[in-house]
Length: 85
Ligand SMILES: [Zn+2]
Image (cartoon, rainbow, N blue to C red; front, side, top):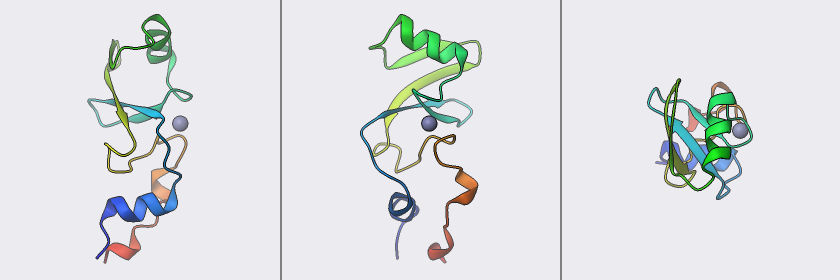
């Protein structure tokens, strides 16, 4: 039986781009970072963690996240997980 990760990976393009994960579970990429995160990245381009007024964002890669993509790049509600049954 396929894992969620495998099914999601089959529907999205895996890249080594870093993703930012907030403590509330939000996932975003550099391109879709909000104003706070974008300016924090600009200030410290190499930091793996950024504290903003909207929470702390930690850097991950798609592989580390088990294929959880940026929620703006890929609308999570459109992922087809029906194969899991
Ligand atoms: Zn994105």
